[in-house]
Image 1 (cartoon, rainbow, N blue to C red):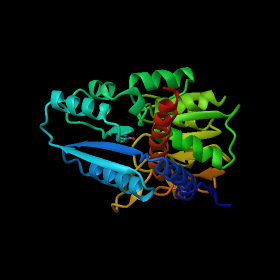
Image 2: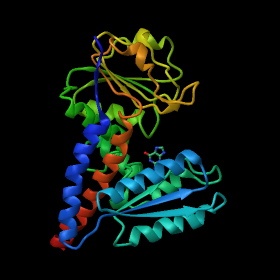
Image 3: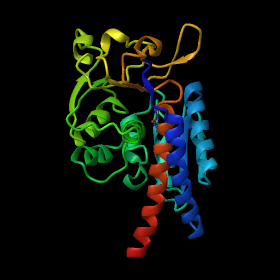
Amino acid sequence: MSSAIINGKEIGQEIRKSVAQRVKKLKEQGLTPGLAVILVGENPASKTYVANKQKSCEAIGMFSELIKLPEDISEQTLLDRIRELNTRKDIHGILVQLPLPKHIDEDEVIATISDEKDVDGFSPVSVGKMMLGQETYLPCTPFGVMKLLEHSNIDVAGKHAVIVGRSHIVGKPMGQLLLQKDATVTYTHSKTPDLPSFTKQADILIVAVGRAKYITAEHVKPGAVVIDVGMNRDENNKLCGDVDFANVDGVASHITPVPGGVGPMTITMLLENTVQAAEKTIAHDKIN
Ligand code: GUN
Protein backbone atom coordinates (compact mmCIF):
# COMPACT_ATOMS: atom_id res chain seq x y z
CA MET A 1 0.00 0.00 0.00
CA SER A 2 1.19 3.52 -0.80
CA SER A 3 2.04 5.96 1.96
CA ALA A 4 -0.51 8.72 2.67
CA ILE A 5 0.60 11.98 1.07
CA ILE A 6 0.79 15.06 3.28
CA ASN A 7 -0.29 17.74 0.82
CA GLY A 8 1.45 20.99 1.74
CA LYS A 9 -0.03 22.84 -1.19
CA GLU A 10 -3.59 22.16 0.03
CA ILE A 11 -2.85 22.73 3.72
CA GLY A 12 -0.94 25.91 2.85
CA GLN A 13 -3.88 27.20 0.76
CA GLU A 14 -6.27 26.57 3.63
CA ILE A 15 -4.10 28.53 6.07
CA ARG A 16 -3.53 31.33 3.50
CA LYS A 17 -7.29 31.74 3.15
CA SER A 18 -7.64 32.47 6.85
CA VAL A 19 -4.56 34.77 6.79
CA ALA A 20 -6.16 36.64 3.85
CA GLN A 21 -9.29 37.17 5.98
CA ARG A 22 -7.14 38.75 8.68
CA VAL A 23 -5.49 41.00 6.07
CA LYS A 24 -8.95 42.11 4.94
CA LYS A 25 -9.91 42.96 8.53
CA LEU A 26 -6.71 44.97 9.06
CA LYS A 27 -7.27 46.87 5.83
CA GLU A 28 -10.79 47.77 6.98
CA GLN A 29 -9.08 49.37 9.98
CA GLY A 30 -6.77 51.29 7.64
CA LEU A 31 -3.69 49.10 8.05
CA THR A 32 -2.09 47.14 5.21
CA PRO A 33 0.46 44.57 6.46
CA GLY A 34 3.81 45.21 4.78
CA LEU A 35 6.85 43.00 4.24
CA ALA A 36 10.26 44.28 3.12
CA VAL A 37 12.46 41.73 1.41
CA ILE A 38 16.14 42.50 0.95
CA LEU A 39 17.98 40.68 -1.81
CA VAL A 40 21.72 41.20 -2.11
CA GLY A 41 23.40 40.12 -5.36
CA GLU A 42 22.24 37.86 -8.16
CA ASN A 43 21.98 34.34 -6.68
CA PRO A 44 19.43 32.70 -9.04
CA ALA A 45 17.83 30.48 -6.36
CA SER A 46 17.47 33.49 -4.02
CA LYS A 47 15.88 35.51 -6.83
CA THR A 48 13.28 32.78 -7.37
CA TYR A 49 12.51 32.46 -3.63
CA VAL A 50 12.16 36.22 -3.27
CA ALA A 51 9.88 36.51 -6.31
CA ASN A 52 7.64 33.77 -4.86
CA LYS A 53 7.49 35.51 -1.49
CA GLN A 54 6.44 38.78 -3.13
CA LYS A 55 3.83 37.11 -5.34
CA SER A 56 2.33 35.34 -2.32
CA CYS A 57 2.14 38.58 -0.32
CA GLU A 58 0.35 40.36 -3.10
CA ALA A 59 -2.03 37.42 -3.67
CA ILE A 60 -3.50 37.91 -0.19
CA GLY A 61 -3.60 41.72 -0.35
CA MET A 62 -0.43 42.50 1.59
CA PHE A 63 2.11 45.15 0.63
CA SER A 64 5.57 43.91 -0.25
CA GLU A 65 8.66 45.91 -1.09
CA LEU A 66 11.68 44.36 -2.74
CA ILE A 67 14.96 46.05 -1.98
CA LYS A 68 17.57 44.86 -4.48
CA LEU A 69 21.13 45.68 -3.54
CA PRO A 70 24.36 45.07 -5.46
CA GLU A 71 26.65 42.14 -4.61
CA ASP A 72 29.48 44.53 -3.59
CA ILE A 73 27.40 46.63 -1.19
CA SER A 74 29.24 47.45 2.05
CA GLU A 75 28.03 45.92 5.30
CA GLN A 76 27.55 49.43 6.75
CA THR A 77 25.24 50.48 3.91
CA LEU A 78 23.20 47.29 4.30
CA LEU A 79 22.91 47.80 8.08
CA ASP A 80 21.79 51.40 7.48
CA ARG A 81 19.07 50.22 5.10
CA ILE A 82 17.82 47.77 7.75
CA ARG A 83 17.81 50.47 10.46
CA GLU A 84 15.75 52.67 8.16
CA LEU A 85 13.23 49.83 7.63
CA ASN A 86 13.11 49.26 11.41
CA THR A 87 11.58 52.75 11.78
CA ARG A 88 9.08 52.56 8.90
CA LYS A 89 5.42 52.41 9.96
CA ASP A 90 4.25 50.74 6.73
CA ILE A 91 6.72 47.84 7.10
CA HIS A 92 5.79 45.19 9.69
CA GLY A 93 8.18 42.44 8.68
CA ILE A 94 11.77 42.50 7.40
CA LEU A 95 13.42 39.56 5.68
CA VAL A 96 17.00 39.45 4.46
CA GLN A 97 17.33 36.63 1.97
CA LEU A 98 20.23 34.32 2.83
CA PRO A 99 22.95 33.49 1.95
CA LEU A 100 24.69 36.88 1.85
CA PRO A 101 27.98 37.61 0.02
CA LYS A 102 31.03 36.44 1.97
CA HIS A 103 32.30 39.93 2.89
CA ILE A 104 29.14 40.60 4.92
CA ASP A 105 28.71 39.29 8.47
CA GLU A 106 25.37 37.49 8.39
CA ASP A 107 25.05 37.42 12.19
CA GLU A 108 25.48 41.18 12.41
CA VAL A 109 22.87 41.75 9.71
CA ILE A 110 20.27 39.48 11.31
CA ALA A 111 20.84 40.97 14.76
CA THR A 112 20.16 44.46 13.34
CA ILE A 113 16.57 43.61 12.34
CA SER A 114 14.28 44.86 15.11
CA ASP A 115 12.75 42.07 17.21
CA GLU A 116 9.23 43.29 16.39
CA LYS A 117 9.90 42.88 12.65
CA ASP A 118 11.97 39.68 12.65
CA VAL A 119 9.36 37.58 10.81
CA ASP A 120 11.99 34.99 9.81
CA GLY A 121 12.65 34.34 13.51
CA PHE A 122 16.42 34.16 12.95
CA SER A 123 17.69 36.84 15.36
CA PRO A 124 19.41 35.82 18.62
CA VAL A 125 16.49 37.29 20.60
CA SER A 126 13.88 35.38 18.58
CA VAL A 127 15.88 32.14 18.83
CA GLY A 128 16.35 32.63 22.59
CA LYS A 129 12.64 33.22 23.12
CA MET A 130 11.78 30.15 21.04
CA MET A 131 14.17 28.03 23.18
CA LEU A 132 12.43 29.30 26.31
CA GLY A 133 8.98 28.66 24.85
CA GLN A 134 8.15 32.39 24.99
CA GLU A 135 5.98 34.14 22.44
CA THR A 136 7.98 35.10 19.36
CA TYR A 137 8.10 34.67 15.58
CA LEU A 138 8.95 31.06 14.79
CA PRO A 139 11.27 30.28 11.88
CA CYS A 140 9.00 29.65 8.90
CA THR A 141 10.09 26.21 7.70
CA PRO A 142 9.98 24.35 11.05
CA PHE A 143 6.80 26.28 11.97
CA GLY A 144 5.32 25.07 8.66
CA VAL A 145 6.30 21.46 9.40
CA MET A 146 4.52 21.66 12.79
CA LYS A 147 1.39 22.92 10.99
CA LEU A 148 1.61 20.05 8.46
CA LEU A 149 1.72 17.52 11.32
CA GLU A 150 -1.12 19.25 13.17
CA HIS A 151 -3.35 19.42 10.08
CA SER A 152 -2.65 15.74 9.36
CA ASN A 153 -3.72 14.82 12.93
CA ILE A 154 -0.29 13.45 13.76
CA ASP A 155 0.24 13.81 17.49
CA VAL A 156 3.95 14.16 18.28
CA ALA A 157 3.72 13.77 22.08
CA GLY A 158 5.70 10.76 23.25
CA LYS A 159 6.92 10.00 19.73
CA HIS A 160 10.56 9.64 18.80
CA ALA A 161 11.44 12.37 16.29
CA VAL A 162 14.78 12.04 14.51
CA ILE A 163 16.11 15.10 12.69
CA VAL A 164 18.71 14.73 9.93
CA GLY A 165 20.51 18.08 9.60
CA ARG A 166 21.45 20.76 12.13
CA SER A 167 21.16 24.08 10.29
CA HIS A 168 20.12 27.26 12.12
CA ILE A 169 17.23 27.67 9.68
CA VAL A 170 15.69 24.18 9.87
CA GLY A 171 17.30 21.35 11.86
CA LYS A 172 18.04 23.04 15.19
CA PRO A 173 14.74 24.93 15.61
CA MET A 174 12.79 21.91 14.29
CA GLY A 175 14.01 19.81 17.21
CA GLN A 176 13.06 22.52 19.69
CA LEU A 177 9.51 22.87 18.39
CA LEU A 178 9.02 19.09 18.52
CA LEU A 179 10.48 18.96 22.02
CA GLN A 180 8.04 21.64 23.15
CA LYS A 181 5.22 19.37 21.95
CA ASP A 182 6.65 16.52 24.08
CA ALA A 183 8.41 14.50 21.41
CA THR A 184 11.67 12.72 22.25
CA VAL A 185 14.18 14.29 19.90
CA THR A 186 17.40 12.95 18.38
CA TYR A 187 19.60 15.13 16.20
CA THR A 188 21.75 13.54 13.51
CA HIS A 189 24.00 15.19 10.92
CA SER A 190 26.79 14.69 8.39
CA LYS A 191 29.22 13.40 11.06
CA THR A 192 26.79 10.84 12.52
CA PRO A 193 28.17 7.33 11.92
CA ASP A 194 25.75 4.59 10.83
CA LEU A 195 22.89 7.00 10.13
CA PRO A 196 20.28 4.26 9.44
CA SER A 197 20.72 2.89 12.99
CA PHE A 198 19.32 6.23 14.22
CA THR A 199 16.78 7.05 11.53
CA LYS A 200 15.31 3.52 11.77
CA GLN A 201 14.19 4.36 15.31
CA ALA A 202 12.18 7.36 14.21
CA ASP A 203 8.40 7.52 14.51
CA ILE A 204 8.75 10.92 12.84
CA LEU A 205 11.72 11.42 10.52
CA ILE A 206 12.54 14.97 9.44
CA VAL A 207 15.14 15.28 6.71
CA ALA A 208 16.96 18.53 5.92
CA VAL A 209 20.40 17.59 4.61
CA GLY A 210 20.37 19.10 1.11
CA ARG A 211 21.36 15.90 -0.73
CA ALA A 212 19.14 14.57 -3.50
CA LYS A 213 17.33 11.29 -2.66
CA TYR A 214 19.72 10.59 0.23
CA ILE A 215 17.20 8.81 2.44
CA THR A 216 16.03 5.41 1.22
CA ALA A 217 13.87 2.58 2.59
CA GLU A 218 16.84 1.22 4.61
CA HIS A 219 16.67 4.43 6.74
CA VAL A 220 12.94 4.24 7.50
CA LYS A 221 10.99 2.24 10.08
CA PRO A 222 7.78 0.79 8.60
CA GLY A 223 4.89 3.07 9.54
CA ALA A 224 7.04 6.16 10.23
CA VAL A 225 6.00 9.68 9.22
CA VAL A 226 8.59 11.11 6.81
CA ILE A 227 8.92 14.87 6.31
CA ASP A 228 11.21 15.93 3.48
CA VAL A 229 12.55 19.49 3.74
CA GLY A 230 14.96 19.06 0.81
CA MET A 231 14.79 20.91 -2.48
CA ASN A 232 17.29 19.59 -5.02
CA ARG A 233 17.63 18.77 -8.71
CA ASP A 234 18.06 15.11 -9.71
CA GLU A 235 20.16 13.69 -12.57
CA ASN A 236 17.45 14.78 -15.06
CA ASN A 237 17.30 18.30 -13.58
CA LYS A 238 13.89 17.51 -12.05
CA LEU A 239 13.01 18.92 -8.61
CA CYS A 240 13.41 16.32 -5.88
CA GLY A 241 13.78 16.12 -2.12
CA ASP A 242 16.34 14.62 0.25
CA VAL A 243 14.18 11.48 0.41
CA ASP A 244 14.00 8.95 -2.43
CA PHE A 245 10.22 9.17 -2.61
CA ALA A 246 9.59 6.14 -4.87
CA ASN A 247 11.82 3.98 -2.67
CA VAL A 248 10.26 5.03 0.67
CA ASP A 249 6.66 5.09 -0.62
CA GLY A 250 4.79 2.20 1.00
CA VAL A 251 7.25 1.92 3.91
CA ALA A 252 6.29 5.21 5.59
CA SER A 253 2.72 5.69 6.84
CA HIS A 254 2.81 9.34 5.69
CA ILE A 255 5.20 11.25 3.46
CA THR A 256 5.56 14.79 2.10
CA PRO A 257 6.18 15.11 -1.66
CA VAL A 258 8.70 17.48 -3.29
CA PRO A 259 7.47 19.78 -4.69
CA GLY A 260 4.15 20.35 -2.89
CA GLY A 261 5.08 19.31 0.66
CA VAL A 262 7.07 21.53 3.01
CA GLY A 263 7.91 24.19 0.37
CA PRO A 264 4.52 25.92 0.18
CA MET A 265 4.32 25.97 4.00
CA THR A 266 7.47 28.08 4.43
CA ILE A 267 5.96 31.06 2.59
CA THR A 268 2.58 30.47 4.25
CA MET A 269 4.14 30.86 7.69
CA LEU A 270 6.01 33.98 6.55
CA LEU A 271 2.64 35.51 5.64
CA GLU A 272 1.24 34.39 9.00
CA ASN A 273 4.16 35.95 10.91
CA THR A 274 3.94 39.24 8.98
CA VAL A 275 0.19 39.57 9.53
CA GLN A 276 0.72 38.81 13.21
CA ALA A 277 3.35 41.59 13.34
CA ALA A 278 0.86 44.03 11.82
CA GLU A 279 -1.90 42.94 14.23
CA LYS A 280 0.46 43.54 17.16
CA THR A 281 1.00 47.18 16.13
CA ILE A 282 -2.77 47.78 16.41
CA ALA A 283 -2.94 46.08 19.80
CA HIS A 284 0.09 48.13 20.86
CA ASP A 285 -1.39 51.45 19.62
CA LYS A 286 -4.60 50.71 21.56
CA ILE A 287 -2.71 50.24 24.83
CA ASN A 288 -0.56 53.38 24.38
N1 GUN B 1 17.41 31.19 2.55
C1 GUN B 1 16.95 29.91 2.52
N2 GUN B 1 15.85 29.80 3.28
C2 GUN B 1 15.61 31.01 3.80
C3 GUN B 1 14.61 31.53 4.67
O1 GUN B 1 13.70 30.85 5.15
N3 GUN B 1 14.72 32.85 4.97
C4 GUN B 1 15.71 33.63 4.48
N4 GUN B 1 15.74 34.90 4.86
N5 GUN B 1 16.65 33.19 3.69
C5 GUN B 1 16.60 31.88 3.35
